Amino acid sequence: MLSRVVFVSGMRSRGPYMLGTGLILYMLSKEIYVINHETIAALTIGAIAVYGIKKFGPDVAAFADKLNEEKVAQFQEVKDHAMSSLVQAIENEKKEQWRVDGRSMLFDAKRNNVAMMLETNYRERLHMVTNEVKRRLDYQIALQNLHRRMELEHMVNWVEKSVISSISPQQEKESIAKCITDLKALAKTTQAKATA
Image 1 (cartoon, rainbow, N blue to C red):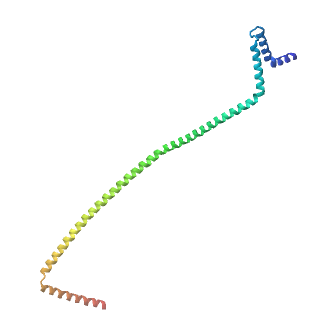
Image 2: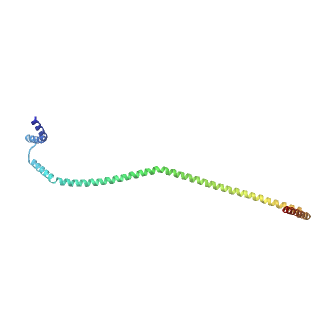
Image 3: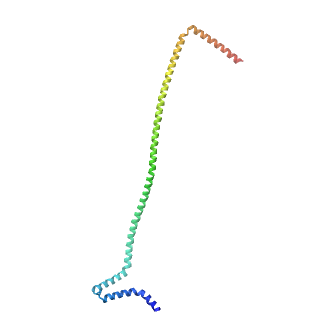
């Protein structure tokens, strides 16, 4: 039983090599593959390739990795620049959308301003018309008052002339004498009240 475990565990590590070797020997023995000068050249080239890879492989790999990292860094820089420009474009678009949202409020405010200006203009014109009508009515009232005053003055002058022309010089003397006696009587009663 122990020999079987050793054989199976040994087969696991040697199996692929044995398969490869057996396959090559089979192909050579059945002349599926014929050894000629090309086979020796292929083996030489293969050996040189293996030697070159083992000797120069790490340096070439480091150089290739360096070139690859430089290209990746350039591509990453281009990508970062593109990403930053796209982020900026997104921010600008959001700002423009915000402005578009605010534009309706701006138009409403402008519409309200225009309505207020029209209302103010209407009220100013209404006030101007009211003042003009008041001024004209005041003029008509002043004109009517002037006519009445002129008529009154004319009537007073006419009555004075009529009264003066109807009074004779004798009546005038009698009227003045009566006024003087009335004044003397009034003065006596005032003196009597003042002394009492």
